[in-house]
Image (tube, rainbow, N blue to C red; front, top):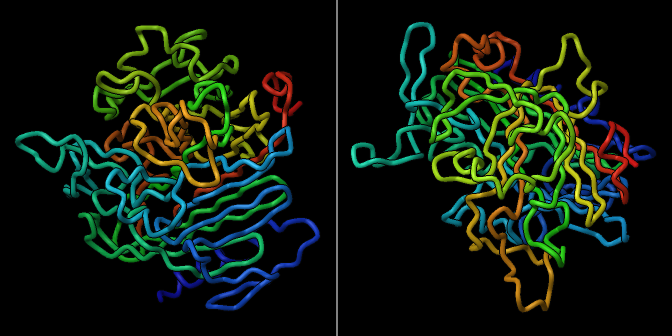
Length: 425
């Protein structure tokens, strides 16, 4: 291992890099050791468990993905609030591959024309979206290509009672990207919190890097007897007065658009339900050609310098039915919201989710049955030099590593008060 990479690995997986659950001691494990009663090996379903206070979660090596996230609602009933599969083996064979809970890379979201220019050299990477007769594999690249990082098995490098770290080495030329990249992803549970840290190091050549977490949320755990969708969830994006303009296939046009107060894309002036404007015909096409809903990259307009942990959440998601509220804190400058318009009712729920014995609702994720919230930088920023994202998205040997940090803080809120300010009710 390169000396610099080894140093970053120690930093990325050190106790200092992971907040500890109050009152618990830290002990690292590698291999088949057991720590605090938890084996570092996977369970019968191929999942690794970690626990915090009032929260527990399962992760899998495939895509370094979160597969289950459990916490109690205001009725004291435990809910599994993220999308996924019951068994880890199914992630690699599911034909839809919805990027359930994984780490898309080496470049998240879309790349226009499956190409980019670095230092005057054009790189053509593998396309995997929007096929045409002339381009049967697609005309753009989504989430790193047909074999992006969330399609691969990562290596477990550390596992404790409340934290887990995975690593991936992406070789030079894979999917057409230049240079080797080594990445470490650490997930930690605290007191009703889920923290994540993603580190990626370009070891041999200058290359684009932009990572994210592609988690599907339903804060009702699909157990709401009134609706199987997430359109009842309220969303607030207090810094998102602007969004990145896109064309009908969701490729950025280069425009940064204002979200006028009261408009379809306004979630910043006040919280509103995700489904509040679904009866408005103007919402058709808002998430791409003939698509109703959201698949939108919002800009986090925060005045520098700021402490991302203290500045306030970049997003608040809440279900009045379960009373579960999620505040997302992030060091990233953009935030993608996808209202799951592409779901078609064919994706089965996990055994830990949904209503049982109810004949009129299938145990599947229906259209708009979830919301994906991606902490990330400006999408396709490598093809928009006027945005000045190079220092955030282009990395070479000897540079500081790519770093993404986010904290998901949960609370219980049985009133509407918590939607009006940063504190929960």
